[in-house]
Image (tube, rainbow, N blue to C red; front, top):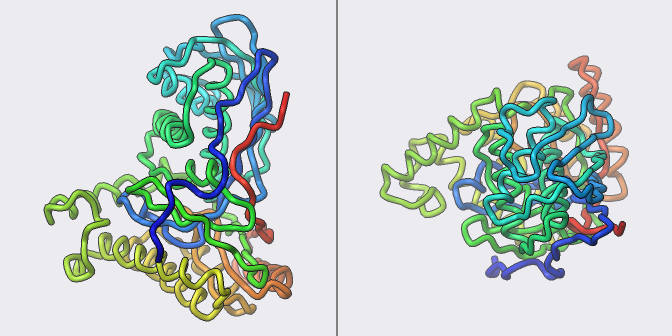
Length: 374
């Protein structure tokens, strides 16, 4: 694996904003391989997908931020200076905008009020980062409305801080960086310790298939935080800054840490094999990743396991849960000419065997967050 570049080969996202307002959009993501490694300083290989969250904003000349979200109940009305406690905001989806405003206030955003309308076609609770797409798009909108110059890494940090304030879940930066750095036709090999990335070509011969298992993923009620704390405790016991520095021998008898170390190695191998479309190699790595997430990190559920099996039985080269687990989506790869057929057969097999209603699509890698104009 070559050294990551400072950022993928695309322009930095400039702070959007004009006196008349603007529209900004941020994509969701699917992680091909490398889950529960980002917050341990590890490697991940996601791609931004053709599902996105869009925020249309206009200044209102006041000191309040008023937000509506298409398809969601209620309206949000919070202080533009970030002084409203995100935990107390109702309806609950409004805690994300409130969290972002508080995060940006701490970075010097002027308390300029604006009105915003949110729309999104990233499935909620799917493991495709609907919340991060929202947080990144809203961070760009709020920064623009407040005239705050901010680079992409700091946008990612502010968006993550807003999410943590909204949910209490201590996530990593993979989702936010992918939403900002996405490159059409490429996956991103992100080094979560260096906060750098390299765009990895996704060959046209490979189809990326995504299907929701029908069980929503809710991190706030999951064991996500406990898994993270356990890994961090292991790193401290070894005298290491993070599990990124651990060897396989050091963690051989610790299943949580063992997953992280082995997954980093799988990400590197997958990134090396992806440009040439070596489906046999790629598929085997995905199946190893899923088994590790299931057996060592213990974040899978029977429905995710059944959907992975259905994909493999219907001709996918490999499949795995994607995202944090505990529900949500499976990602699979197949030869491009048969991708849609594999998806259709696998979801039908899964539906028949479980009674769950899967929702799937053939994913396309797209560019990251961008202004769309006023």
